[in-house]
Image (cartoon, rainbow, N blue to C red; front, side):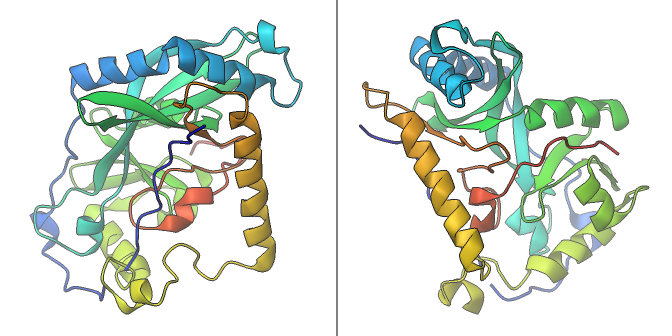
Length: 276
């Protein structure tokens, strides 16, 4: 059996001089309607629904044959903080497209997010994570700042919406980072440059081998190993060689590398996530 998994991105590079505030793009590239349709189709495939049944039944919350998962709504684009924006590159948008997410719902009301990415000419499901953070924050951002880009700063598990020169928080972590009233795009860039500017690809931090761990404790390393074991347990029932990696532990984070740092690979998804 083969598990499809994207390796955590390397992190690192010395802080680069900041570009002028007006030099940044005010919108991230949009996902096309065709991409969204293809992502939803991949999430709805019989093999994926079969995997979802085992995912929802893993803790005995619902019987395997009774899970009856279905895909709800359209796939939503998920953006993460852009390394180019952190580095102050002129014209760089605040976030880059990482994957498209579809929400799956079981017969007993459990929800999961299926992450799809384009591999060659087709779209593949590469991760299943508990909850529906992606679709919820996409909706919250559209309501709070219509037409804006909803994105995540995975290093601190914060969600924001950005439009023009305005950045607004969508969860508690974002409020802690920029305040309840939000901040300007230029001020946000200065904050993330200070936090991550020396951890971009090619830096001493990257070369030291710390990129994936940020010096995590032994307990955190053990917890991550337990999560990986849980992933393998759910995967064991699949026999067609295409099973995506899944986040099986309640509160377990993404197994897909996001944005700048591998620490996002096993970041916890806290529940419930309160919107600002």
